[in-house]
Length: 509
Image 1 (cartoon, rainbow, N blue to C red):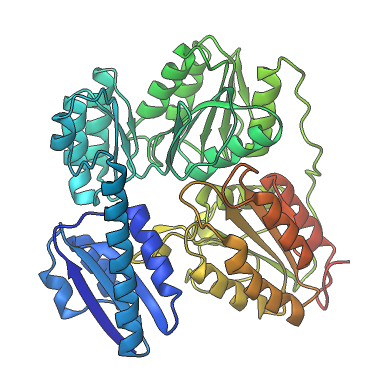
Image 2 (image 1 turned 180 degrees about the vertical axis):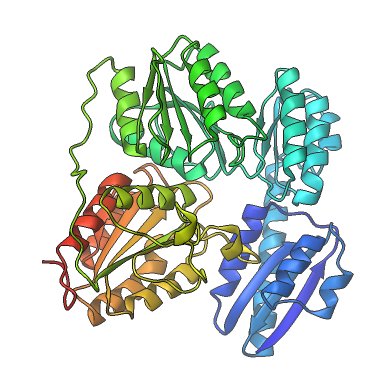
């Protein structure tokens, strides 16, 4: 293998765009790995850790773009680099042809009198807090996609915004949907009267999609960033988002979504929710039941229940929860489930549902510390992996964009004859892989031919309005003998039933 690098000076690109470029280059003939990153010290460390560092990267400045390709032959590496450079040039030409505003800094934005009131920031984490401070000082709300922002900076930014009636969504905020405008990873859903505030990107997406599929619509969805409900941050953005939606004329029901918050923070949010004057559904996945009476606050234990409950409240109808078995299931010895997720909250919910059935599930992000895998690369017994975790994505595109690593892991899990059921998610919409079935079909087809009795359950988080055509994905998966579900809870329940019907020596009954 050879490694080649090209440095493009003074060229900033959004991290989502860089993920796409990396993923596309890695699929080219003869290319083993490719990474397109800004030349920050942190990104250089990432390249070192994954073995893609070269002497040239240490000359790159934070404002430079690093293109690194590992390939079997020099010609393949050169072709990949030229392809990436060509795509970058096309984007620049398209921006010029469309005569759109090209803004490279907050300072430049502030020189334009265009009535902006929100800015999306996706610069490297080392610079993100400074840009966010600048925006807040000038009266702009902030969508902070960047990660690697310190908790101290996050707290300072959110307190500053709160005092001035502004909102900080993030850091590490992957999803928001404001007045029909998507920010980050979002699905194409119907507008309506249900608003969402969530500390979980894929949790927001799942609830948005289910509301749409069940006939409802979404007014706004506000992401808070994953640490917002920690003891240190105190739920500042969720509380501010709750109050904003309560005042919004379009919003008649509000849904709150998070993994288990710090108990004191959860109590405060519940108390504020009951004062807001509209029905509120709180879905704190995996958290213990909340005690106390909260009037207009309703609690849901799954994303599916949250969506259905919100829709019933919006339509002023009685809520009837889905009928799933809650009793422990008898699972055969020597027959195991493996879950390969791109959505961290979906992985967490899957483990929570499995636990209700008495299943012990190991993970790289487990519900309980004793269930932490010794190596995230090696499964044991029943295992559910969050492949969107930072340790998997260092120097690589997110698995919602690039399926390469997850499909390699799928082949590995399928080669273990004790594995009887595999559970996966496919997340469509803005920002996600544009051809998931094209990437998945060759691998799944090969596995099913080799192991026709292996059950594969795929949850599709998306809508028929998404560019990827979720109905088409479900149909093609079905043609390969894969069970597709649009409801995540139903997908996990199905996987548990299939495993319960297995014998150690065979597939599902």
